[in-house]
Length: 71
Image (cartoon, rainbow, N blue to C red; front, side, top):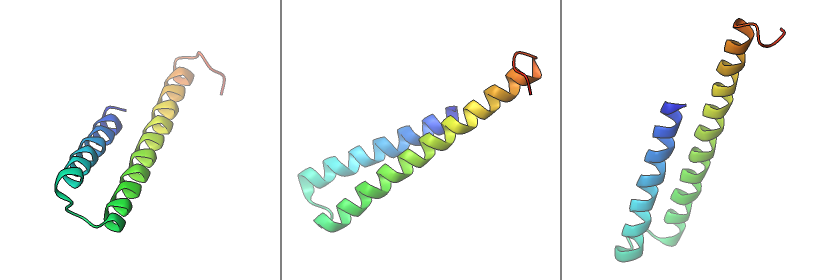
């Protein structure tokens, strides 16, 4: 989960920096910035979802190994 949190944080920080630069300096056209925003949102969601699924899988595996859950 730490890796997922770091990647999600990096995506968010990079997007915020790009948004601020776009706001003040208009680096990209509207269409390009929209595509960047959608891509960042999708990447954020995918990384967050995968990291949560992997964390739950590992946690459940550990609980089964310790005998707290039936197999």
